Image (cartoon, rainbow, N blue to C red; front, side, top):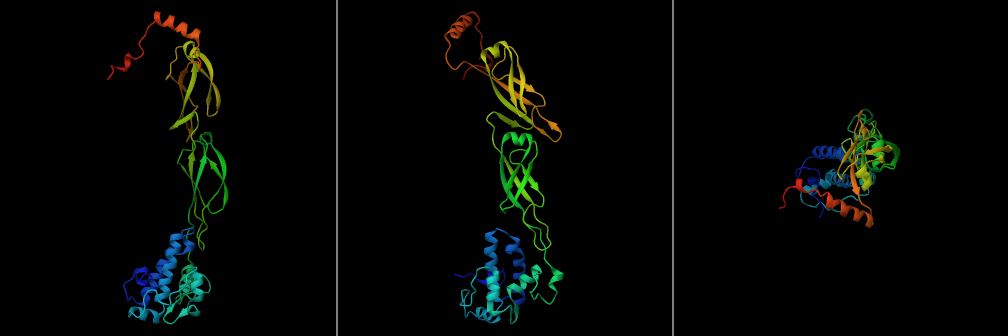
Amino acid sequence: MAKDPYDVLGLKKGAGGDEVKKAYRALARKLHPDLNPGNRKAEDRFKEVSAAYDFLSDPDRKARYDRGEIDAAGAERPRWGGYRAYAEGAQGGKYRAGGFSAEDIISEIFGRRGGRGFGADTAEHEFSMRGADAHYSLQIGFLEAARGGSQRITLPSGKSLEVRIPAGTEDGQTLRLKGQGNAGVGNGPPGDAFVEVKVAPHPHFTRKGLDVHLDLPVSLPEAVLGAKIAAPTIDGEVSLTVPAGANTGSTLRLRGKGIAKGGKRGDQLVHLKVVLPERPDPELEAFLRRWSEAHPYDVRGKAGPGQ
């Protein structure tokens, strides 16, 4: 069932021609496809509003509808394939007795030549509006986010451009590319492009603020006797001193080896993890039996009594 054209335009039944025209102008300015690129819902609503205006801007058809002689789905209801198709075919011309066509009103709103307007020079009332913003999601690696870089992306509009990734970029951060959105209407400026950055997790590094955390395996001899080992950082390997008697959970701090951002730089915290040989070693087992019998010690006393 066709909708009541008065309801579509937000009017009470029987509203006058000037009210119909005014309501249509306001809705057309808001819903026109040029102002809502890619918005199918707005486009469909614009067609619905224009169809309602077409129905009510014909004085004879409006009068018959107001008298209840025809319903909202009368034979004179226009076919829609876009507002131009309607405007060019409706009643064989732009101007109707007692009213202006939808194309006239659109021309007046947008300042297009050829529209009759409302007795004013439409060139003096050209409509301009800032272009719509474009949105894009970009996934980058952990190290690229930490160190910075650049990537070429293609926006939903098809436009390709180079995006600079600032050092220290965080997961979920949005980068604004000024003037890289959709084109404006009339003399309006283009919109902006907003790129939401998704940072992929790293197999070894994690980030907390400006600090980088790393779980680093060490062997039993390295933990017991101490050693100098190579430790990875976001800038490459560095030499790290493991103190004698280090334990799983011991944390070593590499100052200034974290994330740099806003003139500050965090640290890298290295959490040691003592790892035994993958295969049982009879000699090591025999040694530990002898050693543990002579040197017993409690490692769970500080954990408190059992529940």
